[in-house]
Amino acid sequence: MKNFHGPNRKGKVLCVLGILVGLGFLASGQQAFSQSTTPVLSLQTSPTKVTFLDVHFQNAQQGWIVGAGGTILHTEDGGNSWKSSPRRTNALLTAVTFADAMHGWILGQNGTVLHTVDGGKQWVPQESGTNGTLYAADFLTADHGWIVGSRGVILHTEDGGESWADQVSGTTADLFGIHFLNEKSGWAVGALGVILATTDGGKSWGLQPTNNLATFFDVVFTDNVAGWAVGTQGTMFQTLNGGEIWVDHTRPCGSPCIKPAELVNIRFINSLVGRIVGERGTILETQDAGFTWQEVE
Image (tube, rainbow, N blue to C red; front, side, top):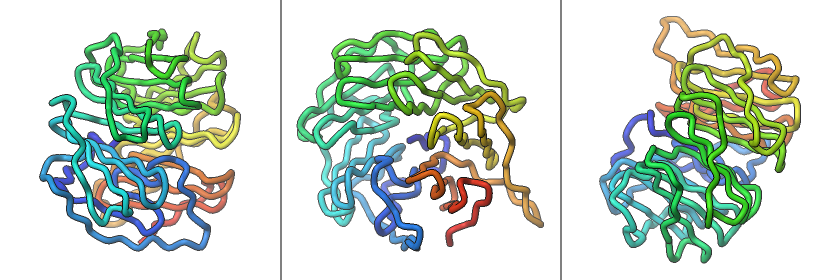
């Protein structure tokens, strides 16, 4: 999840009862919500005033937040209280993700990668081999994962990050989101309307045309054919053929037209039900595979 272009949080955390939103809903991509769930927002205060950039919840109780100055916060009570983890770097931290309850990664500027094998009790630096900013990761298992970052960087590991191999993306655009369905099929998105796809685990990446120059922040697929990408200016694109054709489903601007919110995160719990979150507290929900979206108040 990514929200490095969104508004500063300044030490405040927005929570949804049963779902974490703001930076990104369903932070882990695993915490399910029901079709009848109506989010209840409450403001939570953290012990710091730094800017937060990403959040990840393992379940309704266990969560992490990362941000400026190497800040790592952890909660064990659903966000009612937050504790600071020992600082391992002063770099801006942009993303946090877990493959399972024990194995997690934090990304940041200057090629920063921190890794835990004990559920976040200790974070140990890993050598990424790049000095750019790393924005997002997707891990299928504790061993097998990918990272994307600035200047078209895509990194791949098969040993939990002990070693990272550079994959040729074919672009110099900053990449902000990545999603793999399995060890072969994956997509990465970023600036200048870039959507990349692979069918061989990233050994080769190909550009999928969008005819759009918006920045995409996140991408998700529910199967090999149905996918969504979201980004700046409320941009929403859908594909029903694995990305061979992407169709613009950006919602029309209202009257009076106010600058559309940047959409930073999208998740589906099944082929029909999904949510998008963005700046200014935007939450959109679909219950028909994304053909219609409704605002969640």
